[in-house]
Length: 109
Image 1 (tube, rainbow, N blue to C red):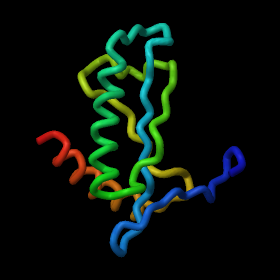
Image 2 (image 1 turned 45 degrees about the vertical axis):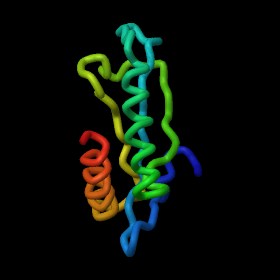
Image 3 (image 1 turned 90 degrees about the vertical axis):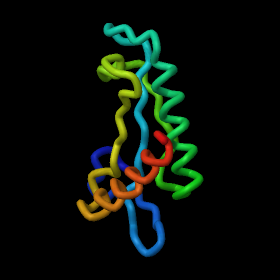
Image 4 (image 1 turned 135 degrees about the horizontal axis):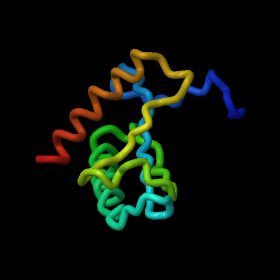
């Protein structure tokens, strides 16, 4: 993939639908905004991703770690979920949200 490639569209087939792949972006404690408990966000992301892999293999790409804070210190479980890429369609992203909602429902019970 070339930088700025607008055709990149990571998808996964779930049943008869194509969903845009999801990816957690977890910030650490390396920015000017301190986030001493960033590992809790990572543990939450791992828990969600494990459930997603159980229910819908391939829905998530590997978790990406960054030193930036992304304001993830403001609340317990505050994470970024990247939905697809520039080449994904709106329909693919909406399909992803349907499956993400099911994963979150199962994870948070």
